[in-house]
Image (spheres, one colour):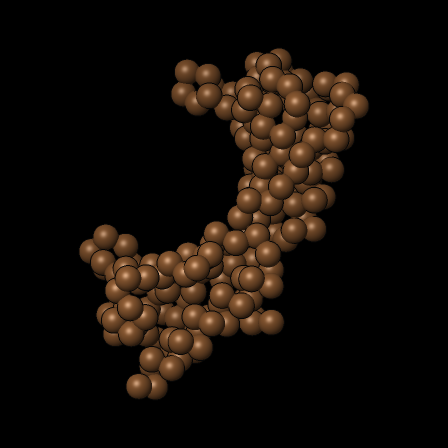
Length: 184
């Protein structure tokens, strides 16, 4: 498996009912499981909450969905799901099991040299690689399933996948291509 670090795991938790966000905000403010709550309906249509003990960001939507943002691994995501569900089951008194799904894992890796992004964009093929330094400092490579951002410093960011083996494979493949182009 190619070496990478998980920067963020993002997922969705779906309840089978609409949420009354103002009532939820009032209740969350009284709960020790929630570090902070912000609900400003004139500014945002969602309730923003940070769950203890690790301050994980969980925005709730009236539709009955909530996102989990900032988990550090799939296991951490599942742990946050359990904490949120425990509180929500107590507040909403439901019997069903809410749907939880990881939607994206953002991972980072390093290539051991500084890179010429112009040369890499040409080498990778302009159909899949986009590099406009005046717009964004990284080369954007659109692979089959993933999007990889490649920075001149050698940092690679992989996004768009939910499977750790696919992430490893995507990072391994792109770093091998980059190293091959650097040698040419």
